[in-house]
Length: 52
Image (cartoon, rainbow, N blue to C red; front, side, top):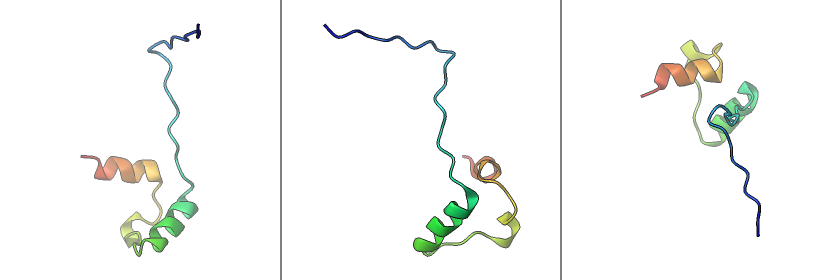
């Protein structure tokens, strides 16, 4: 029998957040770029701005 491990609801998985330089390179591979107004912002700030 396999043992099961129960997780409590208080534990949260950490989400992957890429480095901003790596994110810019990834965008350039897709033919995209950041707006000049978004240049100095972090990825978390951009997510908050464009969250739906």
